[in-house]
Length: 160
Image 1 (cartoon, helix red, strand yellow):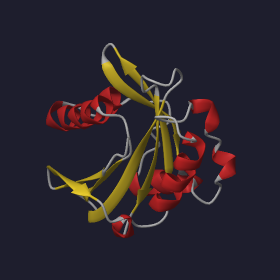
Image 2 (cartoon, rainbow, N blue to C red):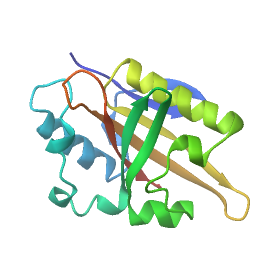
Image 3 (cartoon, rainbow, N blue to C red):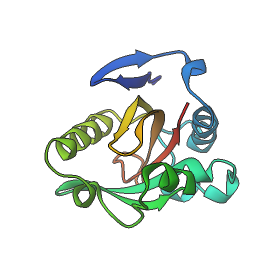
Image 4 (cartoon, rainbow, N blue to C red):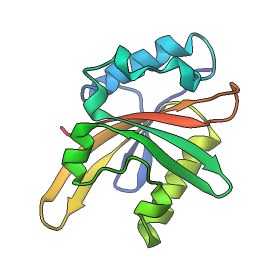
């Protein structure tokens, strides 16, 4: 089954069919994920080896998914992501790192991804009081230990 990428722009989801609109290294991670998927719905976590793609590593995040309650805990945060965000979230969950409306937005986005597992591209801008704002694009790619339920996400971020 072919899935469309989705682009989140200012709170709305719009189908993104032109992969040329994604900034490197996002297309490279999608191509790697597709190779590892090898015809399955999604690759297994064991199929993904960040040392296979060292040039993407600074831009990558890997997170475990839990369902009761719904959450996502970061296993890996690339150095460029830490630099851009100003904090290393490795070992923390989105529930620990966010609250209120921002937490609800993040959980709703995660729920949408899990409802129809496949590549999801998100874009928008990051607002920082002391840094102004920066545009970003990211792609979240599901992984499954049993071939059906998403148990991990691998993601990459770009700052065009």
